[in-house]
Image (cartoon, rainbow, N blue to C red; front, side, top):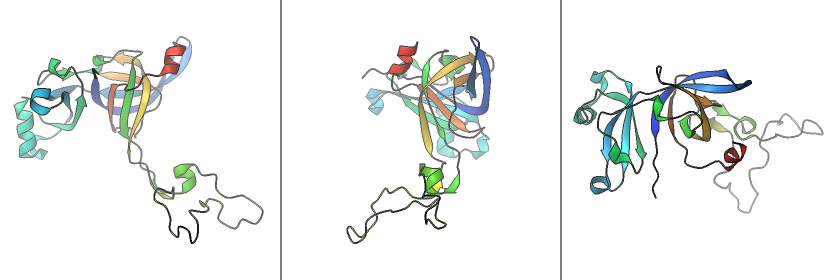
Length: 220
């Protein structure tokens, strides 16, 4: 399958709003890159085609010997974060090449991956959207409880995967088919329409959308 993927790592700066043809558009501002290419994988050597990108400054003293050798081989300064993108045009990249915000264009569809905000231990209403028990007619102080979690003697146990209370958030999450609203190449900023996962200052990965949105095509 011939699929060319462009991607860039960045930092989520926060949300704001801009005007577009008389309409207010909520956007998330991402400090995108610059990233550097630290490795190019080829089918002959690695069995698949991919490109590895590095982002974020780090004190060289905090990088171990294997990682230091890896960055030295690409002739780049050590970076904090690494990501690998499978793309059929990996051979067009060169070691040490810089990837900036202009890799994307306004109006382009992208997928954004980040780590969601950690909410701590949460109940079933907040974590899974349960409606809880009734607010009247004999229900005691169990209004936010989950209710039944399984049958009695048969099967005599609770099935795996039953939605219960527990730790919420802090998980890798991908939002698909977001739109690049605007690009500011001078400052390496990408303005993405809508919200992105994670708190301010968190790491996000922007890459070419994996799926096409039929509704978006109909509305354009």
